[in-house]
Image (cartoon, rainbow, N blue to C red; front, top):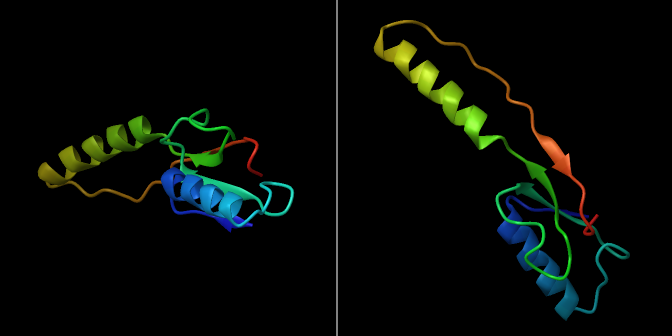
Length: 88
């Protein structure tokens, strides 16, 4: 299995695997991380961990405002989701 740092790298890995005559996902699965690129760009739908950038940005702005006001902020975990495609 290949778990790429982002969707573009995952798609590049899929292209390289095809050139090496390896079948995705029958012989090796590929998953991206960011959900930023369309899963329908190519002949295979990419599986990816999707990040909610809108929520992250909203939290970031709120925390930044609190810091500017001299208040303390805490770490926060933002959930991600898995988008199942044909690559895994």
